[in-house]
Image (cartoon, rainbow, N blue to C red):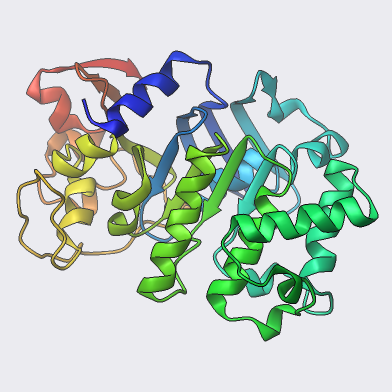
Length: 346
């Protein structure tokens, strides 16, 4: 058993930090109702990093927004369950959710320059979060801020506290965002494409900090990315999203080395020179077509128009979710036809 397997097994023994069950989200745009998420199921344990991967428009960030109850637009419909540490978030008021955001559930965004206020120093923004959620004041808040910057390996924390966001590099701004996110010791950390705009060296450092948050602080992490190469470096388990649905989920080793859904295989084949250890080398190939518009009604599998193994069943009826003997869940008619899966949900 590898260290990752051991960690995932240990995490599974305890109650999950986050459990999403049969989540459906519909947003209203003018007079139109747009279904965004369909029957999403996701579980995160303490110390576990769960990768949420898929193309742009797959519903990854919308899933994170549903967890924090920060869905865009005015009128919206949310059905299903989002259970966080035994509390049902879908029934919480805006005032109650304000308690969870920042303190219990923290987020790291793709571009910190749009999240950090340009007219306040890093220190003012970091200490404000600490004062609000940790109820520390003055020197105690300042000391906590310095400690958090040191935790993200910033060598001159006092200098950083006095700096404005525009004075910092992209990597330093992202470290500051991580320090703010971790300052209140959250139980759940949502990292939404935190390394996309960074060069490879800085990217590796940021990934290391996310892993530290899970290993040392014991936080559960949802790591959102369109890049399976990045996901492979940090995640214990992976959920692959397509057009608002999770089409395959399992341990990172299983999903990367023996992908079962045609979309997962296509994503892996679309990465130049990427072959996970123990996996079969795939011929480099682009995925034809585009992710369908969420407004578009489809009776069958939503990936069918782009799928190289699409059959008659695939276009006629939406595939139910199947769970294989190893616990891997796959939403594909080909898996059902293989005869080693059991239907668990529609």
